[in-house]
Image 1: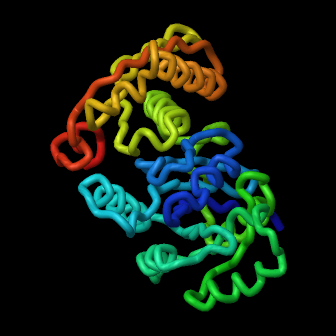
Image 2: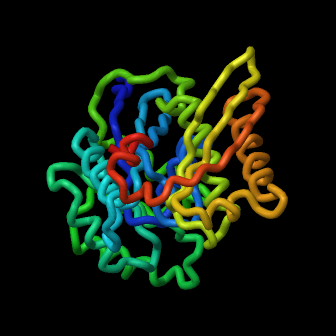
Length: 295
């Protein structure tokens, strides 16, 4: 007997900074979702596609549920998470090993009761006392009847194959949705903006609030070469020199690192230009948020 082919949608959810995007990139084997230690690095639903001979997983990396702060942008991000859960077959609820607090519990309470939820306990490589893992699993498992519990390390790749096996059981028997060599349904234009935004967050440290946004103004393809012009939008005049740096050094560093990532992802030469613009208070302005894709 042949193994039936399964395919379906899997949402990756959890509070900010538990490693959702790192897990998605590890499963896909490519960077399709940006990462940094700043909360709310992921702002859009990013799809990563994993195709095996008998299974196609369509992962949806969601913004972290923001339970601590309000504001128009955070409200929009929470709506994006809730909307994404309606159409998935199974949910991966990611928590950090040894850390489960009120915010994690608040996220868990928001997950729909009619969807199977697999608990992925991430960052097990950071545990100082491995003996503490079992009581931690028992404590979290008491809060919901999870379809499976899989301790993982997204950074090291530990137990990621076991996570895929656990998720496969909850996907419908049906053909694949995407070609076997496709790793995301997001455009190169979208991915370019995300990679620039990642470098801004990574290279400005705590100086720059997470309100920076990136808009691709032009994206031209000439053979395997790409010419990309991006506008970096910040919310205050004082943020602009943080992004530019002394003599433009910081902006050049952001551009260089983003360009190298783009060339690896796109498989060709990239010519990247970056500019900075101030738009005061855009994260609390519904009109500005709609303009930048946060409806």
